[in-house]
Length: 289
Ligand SMILES: Nc1ncnc2c1ncn2[C@@H]1O[C@H](COP(=O)(O)OP(=O)(O)OP(=O)(O)O)[C@@H](O)[C@H]1O
Ligand SMILES: Cc1ncc(C[n+]2csc(CCO)c2C)c(N)n1
View 1 (cartoon, rainbow, N blue to C red):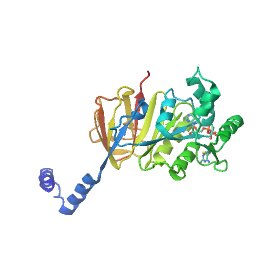
View 2: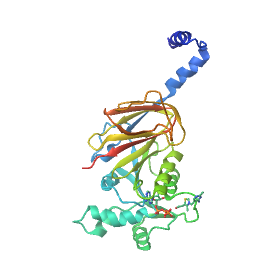
View 3: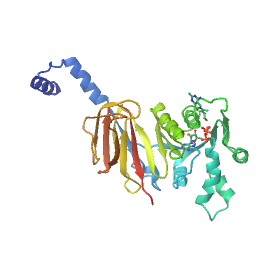
View 4: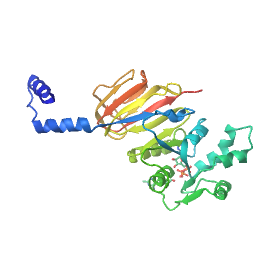
């Protein structure tokens, strides 16, 4: 059937008729393209049981203002890490979410499992406080070629034992806003570790990568996210990207940095689908309460 359609199409377009072997390759590629589901259900107070796939979360705290939903993410996560100065944020800002409570009670409740980085930003009192509670401290001050976020992602990938890594999603708070070189470094990390699920979060938006090796179904949590969204080819130009569920859908459209990129788009349906020949950044706004 596929061969017949292609022959008719090729004849109509005066093209060479595709050989059965090249068609087998096309068919194989079509079958091999797995579906990847995405859902920001970690922003909901309780994660629905029927959510697909069922993910394990790790929370990574960077050195930027903590988003207001950090305690919620903390509760969903099974592993908690701070990247160097991220520990100062946890120490200083977590108690502000619980003004009725004693600050040191809050700090003890939200104890990170690991602090890793080059340790040039964490304050001594903060380091000593968490070390005394049993937090693992990984000092990588000799490595001045990778960012603290990078160092923490490799810790989760290589060292975090007792964590189900088959369906792991790393939620990174404090990743956006502030210094632009840091923001770009953080985006670079999600491109570099494109085989891992990593979500960069701030109070206003979230970003993750859509690897080109999958078809993507993004299930929009309309109570907490949208409608503003974007799809950006960050590394290489895309010859063809196709979407459904957006106000300005892409239809086999070419995109490139310096040419067309899809920003200020609007989500129109609860399910958005994306397929591209390139890795794309997906970003969506987070609703104010
Ligand atoms: N303003 C910011 N915006 C976005 N991300 C940030 C910002 N500041 C820090 N980060 C993230 O938090 C991590 C830890 O921050 P920290 O301040 O400890 O880094 P650092 O290594 O001291 O950086 P630098 O030496 O460049 O100031 C960084 O690796 C980066 O990923
Ligand atoms: C080409 C190049 N540019 C910048 C740095 C500096 N740098 C990059 S990551 C990092 C650690 C930050 O915690 C530092 C200092 C480098 N090494 N190589």
